[in-house]
Length: 159
Image 1 (tube, rainbow, N blue to C red):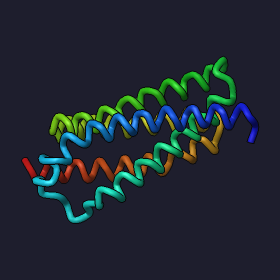
Image 2 (cartoon, rainbow, N blue to C red):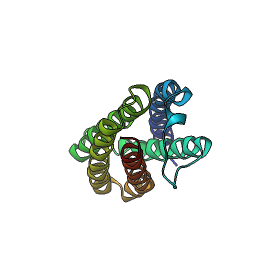
Image 3 (cartoon, rainbow, N blue to C red):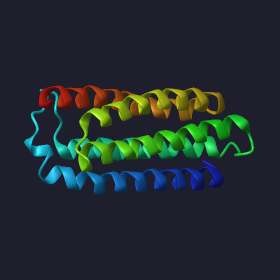
Image 4 (cartoon, rainbow, N blue to C red):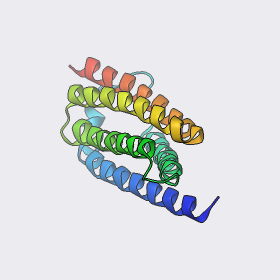
């Protein structure tokens, strides 16, 4: 691993963890009262496991972004991939706000669907620059797909 790759991946991970921390702050509002009162689907995960998986996803996302960034921001495919990455990171953080803080599962579901689409585009652009970076985002896409199903069931069961 080159020094440039290590530094850029570290910055990528830090940025993703900052978004994760903001999501945690938004989550605290809803987890205290609203979320425990919801009827949950049979595939509901323990909150600690849920949080741990998000931490792993942010780590993989940050490394993937660092790999792409290390190829040089001057390249149009790097820029395109990182713009998509930034947009998906925004949608990711916005989901926590919509779902937990604002207690709006339907709008949060729509956000997750948009997030999934943008992740697929991000994987596409990352793959052009670095197949390794694209592969690092596949578990994230699967995790978001699981969250779409979970969010849908929360909305369905509690509407």
